[in-house]
Length: 427
Image (cartoon, rainbow, N blue to C red; front, side):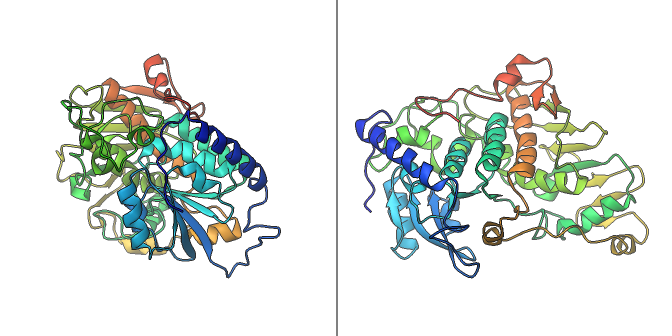
């Protein structure tokens, strides 16, 4: 299908399409093709996937074990054309993501857009009976994350968040997977509470300077880009190429700089080995220059504190080069998984292995088993990132209720939990 140029969310053709989409959702939200019914998918069969957003990460995951890409969507016609060619020319192309999620032959929707679209698209895909694979950060706001958790439960969908260090690969700067770290923490040999320091020593400065510009001049929108649709729920700002594609992360409306982009990669494994997947910190403290209301800036230090005294410290300045990665009252762990605990490997070997996690999303979809990093634990680690962003924007410390998931006695901070959306968009 040749991608069409969609002119306006309020156009007659779009209203007709939304009506058609609603009918499609009604038909596929209860009994998906790969679970039951006429379209039953045997476990050995290949799952089909549609990718929304193919300018960057969406291209990187065209091949994925147990899946076959049958459709792609992008509001940049050049990106779409290039990605379809990269996939062998066979996937169907769409301009409006709602057309893609309405297709009955798609099992998995892979959302590789900027984060300001993640929540809306995840919920709409779940409503359409699709399982969801979403890039990080899971959502741009805490409120959107809560709604995604609700939607996956409501519609019985499987969800994968695309950061993987809690279940495979060597963790940044440590020279080991996270599993031995978790075993050491669980052993109690380090004591309690623990402080985890994430800094340039462990690689966190990779995208630290992914910041915005506060002097953007309006520029003519290129012919191949539907900028209005790219913005979607975000506030209207005049087009400038630095707002979109690879540099969009530098603006609060779409992400949160290097913290938004890389924060969940680093913080999610910490949530896992600290055993905090069902909670959030109760306080965030920030040390940073005053932030611009549009462009994300840098920060010196962000510190998160849990109810039991555990801390996560983000050392933006890379100030303490000798700080241990994990420090407890009984011992320390440094970069390269060096520790001052006597016979540390014997301690680790004496502990049972962590519970096996589902690390292949196609297995999760076929067996209806939760993926290792799903909407529930993913929302909790994304919440830490979003707490940090809000404290950074407001320039002050904040207290947080991890049960109600609201800030305590701070109306301005709570207004950033659920932010207004432009035009017809809502979640």
